[in-house]
Length: 106
Image (cartoon, rainbow, N blue to C red):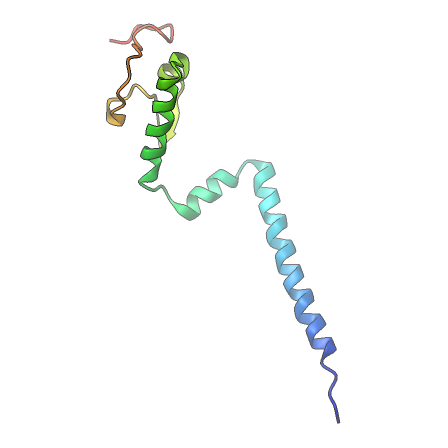
């Protein structure tokens, strides 16, 4: 007797499609609720590249002479927020941030 195996193949392919559909649906829900970044950071963790990426961003803002973004915008570094003027970033820039944001920084 020859066994018919088409039913088993159809069940496996259906199961694979259901699993892929659930994964895609989960990703869409995370993206639309704004939780995707938090979920992604939980999976990948904070790496040493965070400070490198922030250095590149701040250096670009300096090169473009974008003093408002360089001095006033808070950027996320790990679990804290810093500006490009932070001494820990060691950015070589000629922008003076003392009175750019409307407050005098001493």
